[in-house]
Length: 358
Image (cartoon, rainbow, N blue to C red; front, side, top):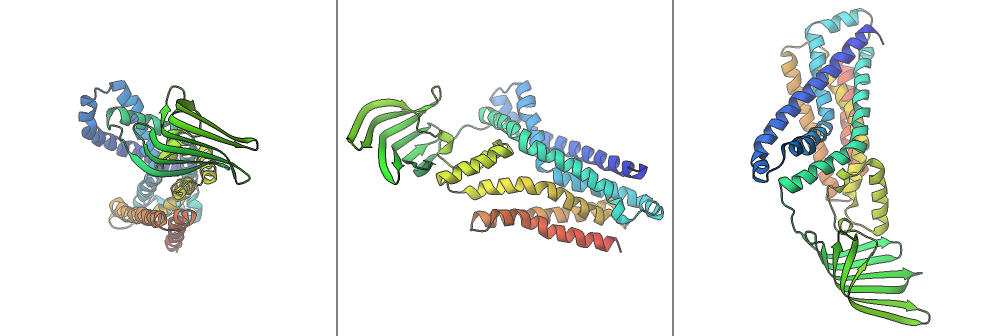
């Protein structure tokens, strides 16, 4: 790596780190002012506020907006080079604009790889810690009731609940059916089932069990029984943000498992899965756009470039949200909806670079 590459590389990453720290500090200050009453009222310990909430808060939002921080860092560092006429001096030394991109893409690669690793193997744990803290000290757990729940537990095992209360972890009018070669071999019914957190099993009340064999039918009745039905409470209802608590391998396994069970709303999980792979490429696209916007000195300097950058990032985020919303309300492919903004803005980034290179 040449001296000029090192100079631009470290300036870019230094600006990224500075931008990241300043914006996150401002975010923390605003969040503290909003939640300080909750902390005081619930008597949250100071060490828990810092360790369990704000440390994980910073990691969560730092990774969530890492591509945006990269974009801002590219615009600021490149605008400084352009305004100080350093770009002209570098180009006069024989370096092409394309070659000048090398340290920027190297920096973007470092950010993208780091973010990808943290997003998929570290963030799920920090999200769980942050949500546990919020549940205990910020918002009370809600009791939600779901009706007519059908689930396929395994290839030949199906369950049904007339209703289920998430707060009490209690279901009403439960039935479990198992088949062999499309023939019913057993049926378990209970008026109520309640999750026993200690035993990690379901407590069935007023149950009736029928076992169908070649020799005849066996029936068992009782007032209560602890039983493992092959599923846990969190598997009964759709949880929109549950994928945020999974590592990448866990998310892959979860989707496969849910498909076998015939679960609905899988497109939410696919959106999260594909988003994890698409985000690193977003970092490179925004790096190229920021570089192309700021590489030439113009009236207005950094301020004008940041305004252009803000408009473009707003359009990118809006495009992304519209694409995702369209997918959640239709049969539109989650894979295509996640990659469409990258494809469109990737073409736009290439156009801007070609224009800047003339």
